[in-house]
Amino acid sequence: MDNHIELKNVTFSYSDGEEKRDIIKNISLGIERGSFTVILGHNGSGKSTLAKLMNGLYKPTNADGCVLVDGIDTRDEKTEIEIRRKVGMVFQNPDNQLIASVVEEDVAFGPENLGLPSEKTRERVDEALKSVGMYEYRKSTPHHLSGGQKQRVAIAGIIAMRPECLILDEPTAMLDPKGRAEVMDIITRFNREEKMTVVLITHFMEEAELADRVLLLSDGEIIRDGTPGGIFSDIKTLKETGLDVPQSTELLYELKKSGIDVDTDAISVEETAARITAAFHLEDK
Image (cartoon, rainbow, N blue to C red):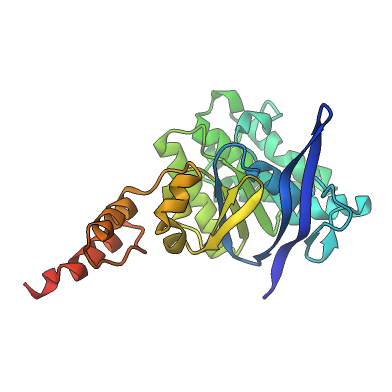
């Protein structure tokens, strides 16, 4: 397996007065190159901290823990720029990432800091804005844009640096359904067409359905690791961790509980309908 990011025995703690708190507890995992991984968990489970460990913003606080990006240890200060080139991060609130007064200047900020010549920066800015459908707004002022448009510009700013991996920390949490759909279309396209490694933190189950793999985090530990179908079919664990359950999955769960022999690993409405059809042998009628 070609791991793009690897965590080995990683713990992250901080002191709250005299008390030491472990936010991440001895996690070991690999993120495969080109994969789409979703991290789910209740508020305070450590999701954002785990994301920041993956791109070197945070370092493990235990001596024997390490995070490797393409084999590069994030604790090595001399490799910080290289890590940033490889792993881009998009945060929940785009206003925290948009710093310039013009859209194209904002997107140019990253490539300029990488030391690219102006003509190469121009090329990257145009390509990035076109890839997120925001090229026509290149001369606009960011604060005049909608939430979804701002987040697309924030993603363009990261894409312009040509990262191999994109980590997104609840990028759609502050958006309306239209804005969420716009951003998710972009994320899935980069993963499937550009083969970009994607790690998405979200609390929207319909977004997790799009992933190859789902990690369920609770109190700083990974308690489940599997496919979306496998994770969502474990209704009991999801509810115990305070997460919503997709309605289609819960329907199958309730049917199963009532004694009907139905497979519960469906996610979409279409898959759910197929499971129910098979359980009741409706195709024979």
